Image 1 (cartoon, helix red, strand yellow):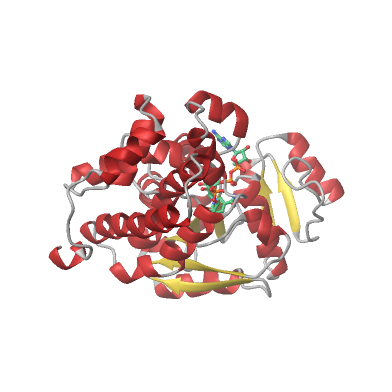
Image 2 (spheres, protein in one colour):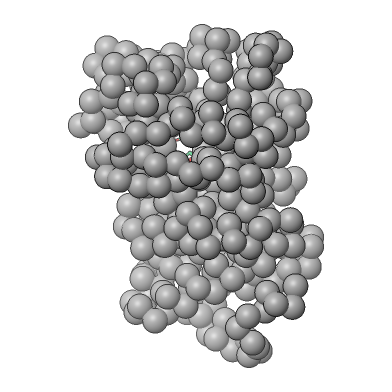
Length: 337
Ligand SMILES: NC(=O)c1ccc[n+]([C@@H]2O[C@H](COP(=O)([O-])OP(=O)(O)OC[C@H]3O[C@@H](n4cnc5c(N)ncnc54)[C@H](O)[C@@H]3O)[C@@H](O)[C@H]2O)c1
Ligand SMILES: O=P(O)(O)OC[C@H](O)CO
């Protein structure tokens, strides 16, 4: 569900793993180009998609026979789409182990402060055991070129995670399984905000010490929130945590990095949006993640400062000064949790 950057490349992964796939696209021209030319002209004009990838704009056609329903739209748009989609997959879910609902999205919902899998459980009415996520260092343009990467399939039902793992294993995509959905999902959402900070540091012309500090302290604040919300601290040292954080922060292919760089160069939110034009999930998630942290009394100073740059007009230079002026403390605060 979603024929954008990641939806298209994930469809390629499924088809290359011999799992037939029907992509749902919003626009007729996108579905037509996939079916007639085996290309998604808008997102990857030079990439020939496998024969096993079909596309439709009809949600019923995409969903009614699906064993695995994959969501790949911007996080904040999931809630408005799910009630209509749900009608088509819930009936099928009465049979066998039931439909698996798989989120590829990396965000936290504004207002409810829910992770994407929580939104899916709430609206689908299906048990959490039927909802899985895929997350990790997975920049779609690199995977489009079949550059090797690893990823994580997380589900509270281990057997279901293994089934998804089998459905998406290829010579270039190596998924591991995990049952820590909370940690994996938070790792994916928070790294987008830290990548905004890292991009901002690039825009300010700051060097590798600053960037390494952002990655390390960003990981510390992600871990701190995760552990408070029931995640396993070790998850944040893995692909869904450190792996994705490093890839997204350091890659010019990352939309969050690119957006942050524009902010660091002195553009405001509207200007950065107009220049980059793509989904940078951290811009909205910095608000919900900060809200989530506040709701459990956890400090997330980098996320907080990114929100101030985005929504309060504070300059990136000023937030650097404020982060550096914070009260000094021991590094390994987790020991105190
Ligand atoms: N692109 C990547 O490399 C990548 C990798 C891993 C995870 N993700 C995550 O996957 C999710 C989707 O990202 P993407 O890169 O595919 O985004 P994208 O912007 O490339 O594509 C989004 C798709 O959703 C559709 N869409 C947009 N607004 C919609 C709405 N209101 N209702 C229905 N459909 C809508 C668009 O038409 C498009 O097909 C994000 O949460 C992102 O963080 C992306
Ligand atoms: O382009 P970004 O910043 O949305 O990052 C894409 C993926 O999440 C990287 O794993």
